[in-house]
Length: 90
Image (cartoon, rainbow, N blue to C red; front, side, top):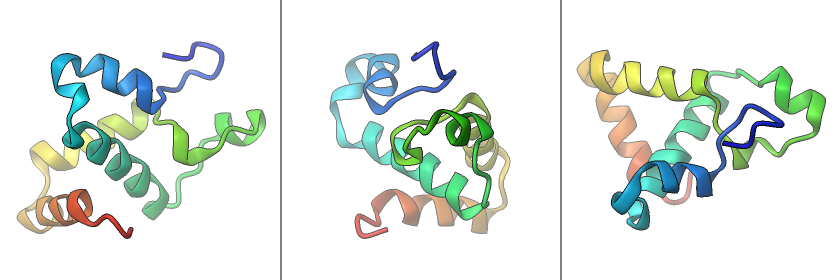
């Protein structure tokens, strides 16, 4: 984790996934978390104040929101995550 900004980059996220980090699913999950955050119109004050490009990081809050939907969401919300995962055009 980049402790200067309290964010996790894609490379850090891959490292956290261990052996699975080398596969497409890790990057796709990271991109879904970013897109989900953007669709919720939640821009981190951290990123704004530090000038961080929001496409290149996730926060713990972003990950918790994604996990909550993945584990506890309605069937429609889970389907939305699945489509976001494999929608390469965004």
